[in-house]
Length: 130
Length: 411
Image 1: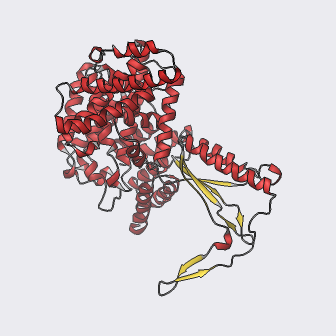
Image 2: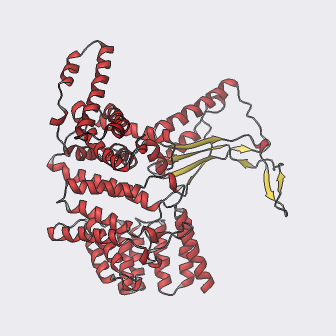
Image 3: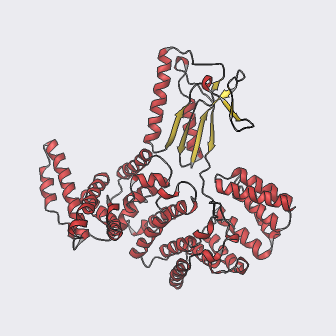
């Protein structure tokens, strides 16, 4: 079963976190080793981190089909910071992995306990239907 | 590399690979190294046989080459450690042809499907070691990166090593249970192939074909086992409907709406013959019963010709052997088809109250279907929609949403 684990933790108007170098490094090191761990357990399908919200654009098709872009977002709007797709044996395992990600170290090395949205990827088998 | 030469020889190599691997593991007791050695032997065969011809005893040839690779490997290890020279000398004298033969494939299968492994690692290992698929092929079949699949396979091997499973036939006492795990893994492989009908098909190995091939070889090794025959029959009778199961855009077509002239008659008669041969033998298992149910469906030329009383009788037997929630759910459909939808809905309420299927989309889907049969379209629409929100299959979601839309428009 495949699940996507989404970190919807970025806020518009809040750019790069102003953590001390040491904490920033600890956080980055955690993410790198976390991905490595998932890859070694044979569960990682893909993982990506996204650029900060100031590079985000909201695109709609105009009447002529051409893109109309909008880049000013209300303060406090939440953005996807990054995601993992994992292929695991059970939903519980997906939740356990999400909890590990949630506890990534933040300022002062304390766990961030950030919310991770876990959703099944539509990869289940259709049954033989009557 | 293997692809470059003719398919006959390629089939031969794939057939022999597990036997050769079995022989090497039996001799050297190391799964990972043995696999490398066998791979090298297969590569040597693929490059030498097209020019020099297939040797008289291809199996012995492969075993000999693989043994030589292992010996070289052990030697270099020995040289590096400057000890245990005696082993290398002993290994040199090993006579490949004296090793037990076909049993090795079976032992290998028992090992790859060991209950100590998670289903997904057992599947991967079986396809790799017994099926002879490449890691890249298995990865693409399961739509995961090759590196992830490689890790999954290597961890499976480590787990086998750590659990200390010996390369030998399970004892009589364990045998039935271990064979059940083997059949379950083959069943899962088949299902995976049968039910993943979307995605970039061209690059995918046909998992159900592979499962059928493996089930055939287990059936050859254990011709008297009724459940092995039952599983093979179930696969054939189900696979026979494949051409009718999806529409031009890959959408799911349920059994009731399939164009039955597209069903593969050869597979159907092979499956029925297998079943007929096992039934007189007495012992009836879950796979045989599921195959028998599939056979009843396959024998109906039109959907309205389906012999539902017989299907219901078979589900009654099946639920005594394995009363899994899914079996119980299918049983309610058979009841509804024989005794009417209200009887089916009654059973469904009881099943719902037991709570095992709580929140499961199939419960809603079946309820929707029975409500539609009973003419209660508004409630059917509600349950088709509930089910569509709960399934994790994209095709099934599309199918359920379409059902709801169809009813809304006809009401």
